[in-house]
Length: 452
Image (tube, rainbow, N blue to C red; front, top):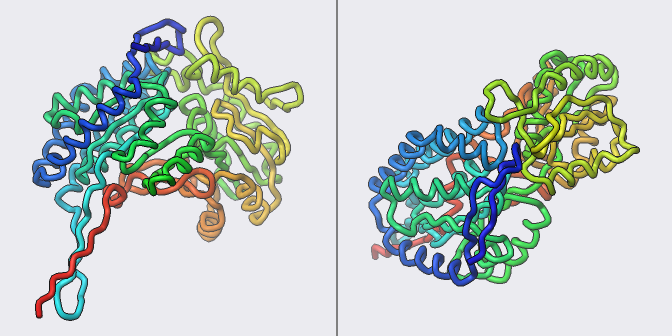
């Protein structure tokens, strides 16, 4: 049996050892999920909804324990971890309303009656990243289960603990065995088998663009459906007419939340040149007051990076030629700490173009509205972003012009479970969340009944 040690990124202490599923164990779990599907798909919609509500209640009753577990496993601040566990609860509650509303249509047709059905796909493979282990898992499994599918879920190898606990809570809530199966394991074993196994009918993957491309290519062999939520290099566009104090005060949260390990992080800050100096003056104290430290403490804004290897990756972007405007502080000693960092590079620099996935933001000036849109769109990514202006017309024009799937005006809100989420360009394919998500886990079947 292969195992892996789970390390607390704030202390570098080993907190658990987890068994990794083998190829044979993965195949067996998929087979069990297929057998469970034949029963789960026939559960009355009201009963399926009731079980999902019970699952949500079980998560709510265990919320603090889940949050503390995420703090230890992923280094998230306790406040963020509570929100993440609450998001799982809320997503389950929201999609508990779907089974009784997943209705087809009656379409007029000569000589008979034409009706459509939304049929569940079967076994769904959900592959979850390490940056938001709890909510991203729920964004995949909740609508899939609501639509009548079964789910095999692979958490990230270094952050599996909350996913394992969610699997236990599903059983405690009364979901039948093998309807939701959590399979800790290597991506090259479990994740790859999800892609190649013919019984798995859809892959939901959140992670890097490079891995997403390989998954999409692999799924093409079986015409297997796929939803991809991939990387981001998102722009925070601040116009001269904006509330500059509010824009500067909110910038650290938009870029450094979860230590910048967020594909929606607004790590490119575009500031109209006439206000650049004043903006930087306002930004510096906001960054230095964005506290980094023990994530168990209620007052801390930012915890450590997830691993030593990831800290090395983030640090590699800050070579001697990178202009550092200022930095916040971070603890020394054990833990994978990295200080909040503000750069002032050129728009064609590596730090402005590539996803760093750490607490590093780059500030670049722009001249006018057209220039701001040009710079914002000069990236292979298109996931999220923010626009700061008091001009409603400009807000709408720029929102329509920026190539990104999730934009906020005078805000950094990216994700609401009742609205669709996903990216343009190389940030992904398909949409998660929102009212239509369960339909993405179904096939539309058309039936014509002749009446002549």
